[in-house]
Amino acid sequence: MKKSVIIVVFLVVLSPCFAQKEDKLTQEWEKMHQSKNQSIKKFNDAKFGMFIHFGAYSNLGGFWKGKKIEGIGECIMRYAEIPRNEYREAAKKFNPVKFNADEWVQAAKMAGMRYIVAMPKHADGFAMYDSKITDYDIMDATSFGRDPMAELYQACKKHGINFSIYFNYLDWMDGGNGGVKDYEKTHPDEDKSYQYWANTWDPSPVSFTEYLEKKYKPQLRELLTKYPGMQELWHDMPMKITRQQSFDVYKMVYEIQPAILDNSRIGNDFSDYWIPGDNIIPEGEKDYLLTGDGVSKKVQDLPWETPGTMNNTWGYRSDDLDWKSTEELLYWLTAITSKGGNYLLNIGPTGEGLFPEESLKRLKAIGEWMSVNGESVYGSEKWLVNHEGPTTISIKGTDSREQLGFNAHFSPQDFWFSKKEHKLYITSLKWPENKDVVIKSLIRLTKDEISKIESVRLLGSDEKVSWKMEEKGLKVTLPSVRPNSHGYVLKITFKNV
Image 1 (spheres, rainbow, N blue to C red):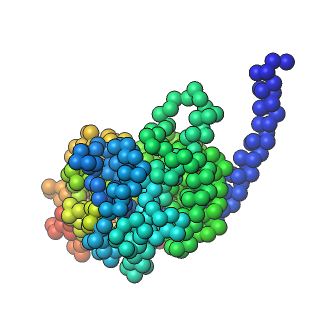
Image 2 (cartoon, rainbow, N blue to C red; image 1 turned 90 degrees about the vertical axis):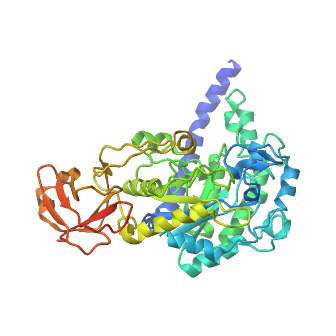
Image 3 (spheres, helix red, strand yellow; image 1 turned 60 degrees about the vertical axis):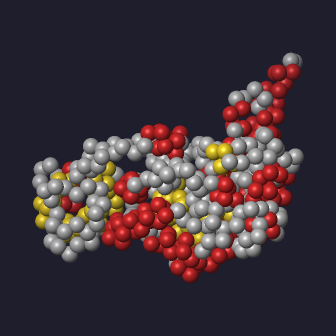
């Protein structure tokens, strides 16, 4: 018998064993996942949160040795291919003396955000908390002498905001290369583009497995123990980690905080909620299947969260002045929640520890809109349709938004829908000139449902709203006073019988 035939027969014989092991992992994961229904509801109800990218890279602001380095700010070590020892020396200069946890949390609250996802460690491996596992952290390596994560956690508790964390598999300093070396050994002929985010310019001699067991997991245990009651754990960059490794991380997290939700970037389908992609709003089933960061199963029924930037970077870049307008950010919030998702809007503080002034202006404006219209966001679900009107927008990620810009011109005929209990919310980002609008999608209601319409009102207004169901749809005459300069929200209440 030829050697190749022997190998094929061997694999055929063993394949049921592999399948059985995978089934066992899936079954065990399913039991843990199903116990989180209450956490999933709380996550869905929160709807709007703040992402914070803050680390030693913030102090560099997109520049290395006086040279502008293209790319997102938090990954400057990769783009500039900074040697590990040089980056370690640069991290020592990080001293965010103007950091004030109370001010950060109050800014999130001002914007109407219900939770914060902070960043104890990004791909540069630098810990933004007092880690006992390494001295490569803000307490030991810098003169700052404070623990930003501990202060943020306490400030969140004080102001009633949920605290959660981001924790990257990558660690360019200490060997966290997502298992690409092991993968390459067994896939020598495969395209090597997957190596892009691995440290190939000055790699640590430590294997990924050793890093996973001696740094990644111990640090994650530290954080989960330090900060009980978190809403979510934002994994990132699973790269080529194995199915067993993803499962082991999920199980370890569950054993410490059984109510926490793990996102889809934990890898290999062991997740509680889905990330469609950075600055991406899924458009249909194709998007659900193809833009799911390695998620192979259908995820239409999983809760989801879109992370978004205020400009074109996550970590601070002093030269990125392409700020999204308030109108654009409200579109993202409205479009995402109309499809049942959560919006996680990012802030990249400066190296001094301050939110950029342009970010604060937009947080304030969003907060003013939310103070009037937040009822249509919190705790809402998707309706029969999510949008009607002539404006169509498709943005496929951060690079797409940077290159193409945002050129939407909303019309008074554009409406987005959300619902909860016996209420339907209709959001418009454009006030009509003559105060009359027709919402065509309401003809989808049955005659019985139409007969149960109890009231139509404008959120933020006590003035009477005239309305009539016509053949083309629901005709509404709006009051004369606008509650907010950025469009409006109508609330339809049905008799609860």
